[in-house]
Length: 170
Image (cartoon, rainbow, N blue to C red; front, side, top):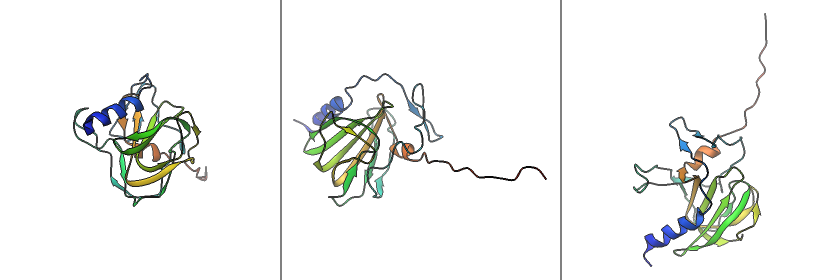
């Protein structure tokens, strides 16, 4: 089976949940659109502490080249955790690469490909810190809102705000 066919089948399986929401990413940096408000701060976190070596690059057209996620610079063997709470909807090998997809309560789906070991099964409930597996070189994270890929880094950028007291009056 050609490699592109296998990837297409993986994407079809990984996104089998019906797309009930439409979302977009604006230049302002926050996911927006009907039904896709920005997540509360702290809802999503990076899957591991490693540098991003290939950032999100939205394709000009849905079928065009681009990077529909983040690729992490890992050597292999690093623990990989869920980016947020949810239910594992896919955990298997695709074209020789192990992959895990998690459906999150807000309807977003995160997929990690390029794992050397998978420690979860479809149906498992996970928290943002649950160990999903171990990284292989070229670990990739993609996030979808409905049928659109969004920049995962935007979900991580929401940070809790701290109050700052200022004097009032003279």
